[in-house]
Length: 292
Image (cartoon, rainbow, N blue to C red; front, side, top):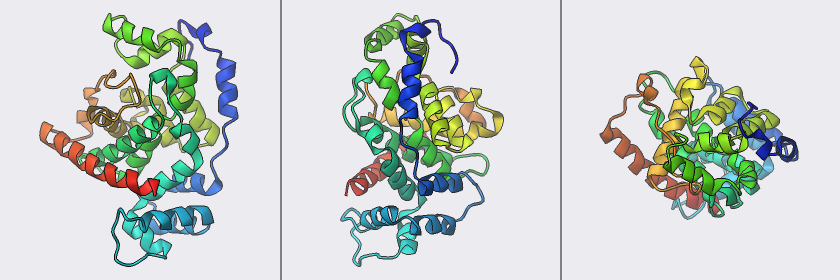
């Protein structure tokens, strides 16, 4: 983690210990994320992983048979369930199973309520996937979804150490002392939620592509070149989520849009409006399904 001008404000050892106490991802969840990160993977690769995890199998079948989808006949086959739900819902279930407590707790430092982080990241994931549809080159839509789902996970721990500085951050932004919320975090504590999230991703041994998203989603141009399209997709998805009012607290729309996305995506005001509408529709269905 890089040093900040006020690094003594936050006890870095306490942050490190909080991260080290986190349970590791299950082997099947980690394998699933590794497979999703491979652009050459096929749906059958995901099916094989789910079939060998009884808990994940039960959650997937429960989701696909929920009233949200209104199926006339119950689905009892994982193959059929995944064909119907798509990889993104399986990823959501696996991530929720492994990080549910982190996503559900209130983000007190951001003045966020219980469940705000999960709702924001789920909306961002859906929006990131929609953004990826407008990529100028080949793009793995479900990898964009996965990146969006995990991009703000660092807030779950950072929020605990941010309680005393949150209001001051807003004052710094209003006075023009700093340009955005991320800079305020770093100037006031010596850390920010992206750095903490990156260390969490390393602790969990997540794929490097997801580590890059978590670390650079507010400043995607800082990612290595081969990772930039993915990071930009999540960068935009994150902002779309905030535009739709799905925030994590008082940092909503306190970040800048990096215009460098134009190198990788064909987006216009019309397509952005379509992305918001499509994301809102899918979000409502996904949220209800995952609660079932």
